[in-house]
Length: 569
Image (cartoon, rainbow, N blue to C red; front, side, top):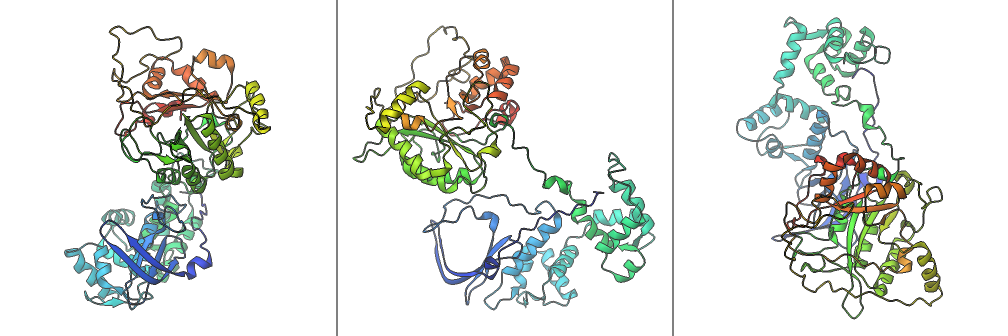
């Protein structure tokens, strides 16, 4: 790039982490168990690795990007790779990471084994090149030799790398610049190369001026280590390679790496990373439900998770989460709420939407509300923000106004009904009158035989609704209850689900906090038949797309092919 930009990719690592602490290390999987007492754990100065060593044992190292979570009393069973703001795109950083990893893999005496270095570069012929390269630099080079970490500097590692992996393409480029007549690039040749080959001709010459001798002299001073060449204002091949591998030749403009995203638009203007039937770790029928899935998807960056809530049948009548009537295992609703609280904002401060599919009786809905209120505390958004009232025509708040807030998506009572019932509840006079209570463990009814001639679709219903390509889902699912406890209802604000009628009706009502869910088949049909209306709908209010019922293997549709273009969750 031609406009200098100081990009600070280095994160400051606290001194406490660099100095390290002593822990007992316990490793366990299906086949092996390891116990290593009194390990000194440290984080390197760049914050890339956590490495450890105990007396009489080899040192070991893992990348911090492999650490998904830190918990008291236990460890996660599955690792999730997270993204850190480090210069991972650029070749020098990859080399530095490789060198650091080698430097931490010491033997019991604290030295780097030569065999570890040779293993890094492969084997066979390359192995001999490693030994020869180490010998040329005056380092121990025998297969059983060891090297002091202070002697194995990054510069020596880099020189070894270039001996083993020569860059023939750069050699050809270097020869074309010098015309094969010199071992260095002169100042004039460098100016010509920068303006004719490196500089983007589309750039504005006022904002991004052409290279001159002054700027090219700065390049030589920054990247040339040979004092003789530097005094002659020329660049050796090694200095040229250092320049090409520097941040000044990044594959993207460095100022773009710090470019902020506009998070001040209404919530409906964003694609929201979502999960369907979050609790399942395998198939949709007969699968295993686990609390851990909520932790893992939130740590992976998901911002919308689903909770299928059913009545618990034990003596304590604790509400459960399960895939109702699909023969899946159960987990406690309360445990899921704790897991969400602990991991909701580890990787992002932007809001979380909890999509409730509520099949609970009013008595157990009270527990849903109680746990959300007590466990989430101030994280739960219990009422609308003053600047974004729940009135027709008022837009949804932006993500920036909802940082570290949890929103609940659940059916809400009519305002006048909620007000009366909430007052009765607070005064202790509310009487719970339920619909027929559903049983999550009851077997599902087999799918009904489709009629020979399909009836005309209801007004506003999309063509093809109710199944994909004529396939019936393996299980018929019961819709969520229409009854809602007033306390739970009072916690619903910007994600109020309603049955979709038509685009015309939604536009006429102009209620931005109403949202509807569509099967992937129905949504795709809308994209084919009412694309403009669907786009305008999603500019105003949120949509949620769920996979078709035939995806019993938990496969996903491809949102980037269609739905991402229309701003749906």
